[in-house]
Image (cartoon, rainbow, N blue to C red; front, side, top):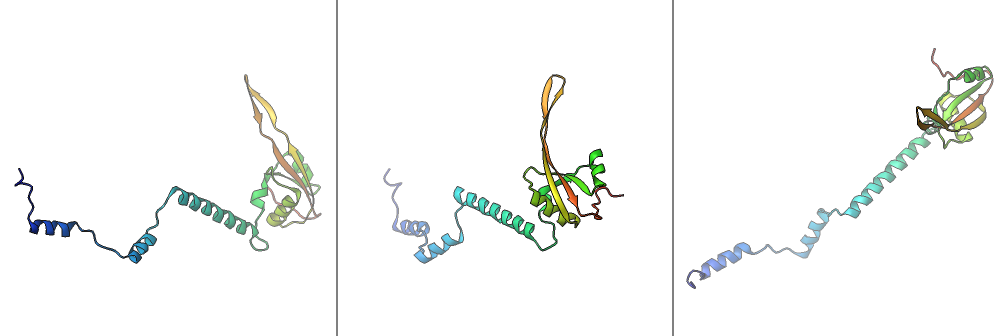
Length: 163
């Protein structure tokens, strides 16, 4: 049995040369590591947070914009409220808008001046509470909202409904 496992010197040297790994210098190893960074779970998370920060800063820059650009209106004004009472208030140069819950009086004033180009004299804000509604034996809630009644300078008009 020993005869089958004997290796000759020629076979050993050939196999050893074939199996030898190429030798690298330490500088080449460092370069190869720099070229191919290994992604871990932490780097993926930090990349996501950096992307979120970039989009947040970009949206903040859009809101600032140039003078005359619409910046705050989309985050303040929801829609004009068209009701019988609102149409009667239009004769007194007052307009009613539904606004987002976070809207403040100065923000509503600034948004209306940006969008419609009018001079706002007074802003009144009302929180309309949610209401309980029933359909058969199931009960639910009609969601509440915030509305702003805005008084503009006499003679100026806001075109809410196109004619």
